[in-house]
Length: 118
Image (cartoon, rainbow, N blue to C red):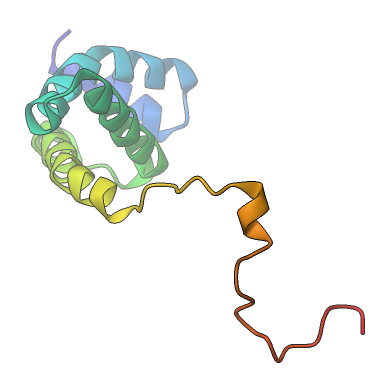
């Protein structure tokens, strides 16, 4: 596939063509995955990151770069998301399993508040 074919896919994606989007993803998913993997180092994490990158691309397809600037822009977006991905993962606190019986013993954060319905 040459640059003209890529431009056609990009134009189709901007117009909301589902087949163009599918072709776009198929054409670029290997390269985006490789870039993501180079940053996260784990296959599952790289798959998640790749999916996140494509979701973000789809959501912003109306603002994609034009012409010869598209591929450098695309890889810059993917690189930036890859750099931010581990940071975002660390910021999220892991879920804490709390036994249901312990929930009743949790302190009321607003002891002076009136119960609902009174």
